Image (tube, rainbow, N blue to C red; front, side, top):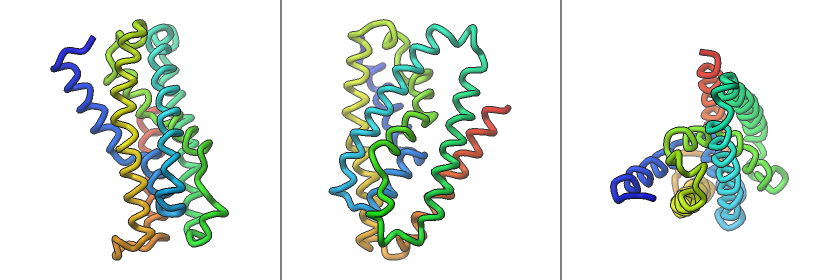
Length: 199
């Protein structure tokens, strides 16, 4: 199980990676911006579900199949980059319609799929979660419990950030500018991911 030192490193690693800007956090902020905090808070559940599935699958794949299929991580990164690029284009095109956000709401399925394809899942499975989590049920459950405890408040903080833009608490950024900026972040992230896959 975890010692105090390994638990501290595990928690710190999770918190830092979850707080970093990326496709999921960008979508959470955009949802808060366009739909408000109350309507978007449930998306933290979709984020959690996406990460649990992604980390669990990547952990098992890396444990069993990575040696015989060395192309698998690169293929997953390419697929992720294509989907993230699609999200970036869609967000940019809909930026002018931010006031009518109900017609373009970011839903549970969109956030779940974006999180499922988020390369942070691979990073968590390969470098942050203890290897024993993917063959020991008790270590897996303890790891996921800690992960969930950190994910929900961090996800809600990103939603609150987006909602604060919509409420003009941050007056020097307009909602449309924020959404276009978010789409640029997604686009750059997609290109970076594709570049890393082909290197």
